[in-house]
Amino acid sequence: MNDHDQTDGAATATTTTSIKVTKRHDRSLYMHVLHRAVRLFKGRIIKLGDPLPAGSPKIEPTKKAKKQLNVRERELEGVWMYDLLPKQSTEKRATKKRIYYFCGGGWQSPATEQHWALLTEMALNLTDTTVSLISYPLAPNSPAPETFPKLMKLYRKVMSDAHEAGEEVILAGDSAGGNIVLSIIVNALHEDAERGEELPCPKAIFAMSPSTDLRRQNPDIKALEPYDPILRIDFINQTASSWCGDWDPSDIRVSPLLADLTPLAKRGVPVHGLTGGYDILGPDAVLFREKCRNAGVQGEWLEWDKQMHCWPLAFNFKLPESVKAKDWILDVLRRV
Image (spheres, helix red, strand yellow):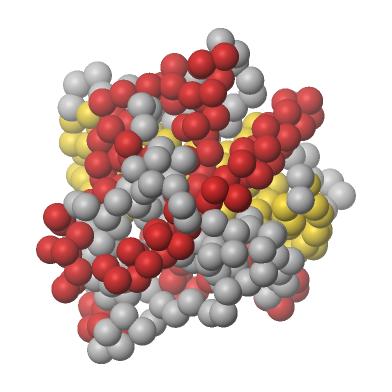
């Protein structure tokens, strides 16, 4: 496939081999003002609460989500999950696809109001898709050495159930959640290849501002820190260490950037995602995207300059870039 550019207003779409990247460079006055205001807090916007007990935490949907959705709580392989079903079509809805979503929060915080809002948008607008939020065990009391094997077991179960039900699965997540979905699938496909098996695998992956390398060695992280409105190096180092536990951060079960990604291409699992130019986790996410391209993995990515970490989650505040990015996500998921 030859490279080509298509320009539509402020957006430029570039396809290089298997990866299509839509690049945007515009920033509204509203977003500019927000960034300046948030920087005044010097990294105090994102705060971690008290550590939660070990194991999968039960969580409570927001009032707005419960007003628009029927939220069904269930437990599978010791992990709580929440199926989001629009009230007006619960009985009539014919599900062809299911999104299993892992929320970010430094591997230490459950779903926020912003996460519930985004998942509600997905549930209401993706008419052939059921959205399921996964409440995975959280660090520091459930670090990766304890949690990752449980999530691999959960993954095998949901994929087996989906195969039997004729359901297509998309695994999605943001930030730490994006790290988890990438790590689970990459490692599962490696296991399959080593055993000479082709067990059921997802239709696609979606990762918003994913954390892909927990070594935090990329020099661009330090160069970007003065521009990042919300994340600080101390914070991302602390959360990575908390999740890794006694695993080395170069372990591919926590740093998918370091894994061989060719099994994704061989099994035809596309990886979609987005990155912001003012996000200190962005450079490693871009490296992951480029490694996907070099491995022949299919995917669509949005790269938006001067945007903060996980900026689509702010769409409820009517920020133009957040609304447009949220709509872009829905469009990609609709076409999977």
